[in-house]
Length: 164
Image 1 (cartoon, rainbow, N blue to C red):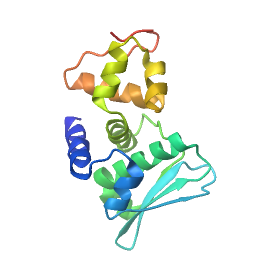
Image 2 (image 1 turned 180 degrees about the vertical axis):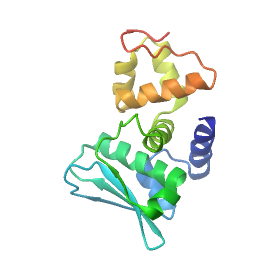
Image 3 (image 1 turned 90 degrees about the horizontal axis):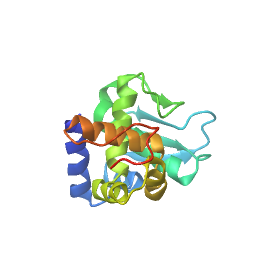
């Protein structure tokens, strides 16, 4: 899905940030936090206005992840969201292509390639690297898998203690 990688990198270059909340402020996307019960976040349209709502009960890192994921829906699935609200009960739903694409978008947005590679080359495993980058290890694994699909050679075996 190198087109998502390219899209995210163009977005970062244009706006000078990886922060999904800052991007929402710069884009025509209304973003709110609110109590959502069992939902992590949702993306919908109210009239012609795109709206992201992130659960206020999530920790800071999970709010960033939920916002980045929903921002992925804005860029990749607006046509679907205009028909029906996209609701996230489980961010890492790997069975649904729409959800997986939004996870790929979030992974590329929240994880800087050079920071990640530096940590991995220094001997950090997936979990330590994710902790240092303040992201969920599942998100890091998605990033590594996507980069492998683009020709990189990262070890994505969860049993591994070292990726290089």
